[in-house]
Length: 85
Image (tube, rainbow, N blue to C red; front, side):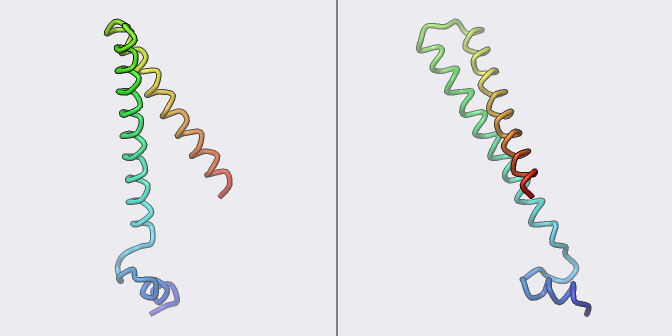
């Protein structure tokens, strides 16, 4: 048993697994959460546009813009956090 394996056993990672697996799971969970938040924001924007009297195409345009803006904001935050690392 080398030091790397001993470190994995101490922190609770079973033998034969790598430390990257929890990182991958966390990353996928974060991406899914961001997509759900973006979809909810888009749905809210479309609903508000319809309540304001906008047509369906206009409401869909508002939803698309909101969805894109939310994903762009998430990408900008991820880039800023990656630069700090």
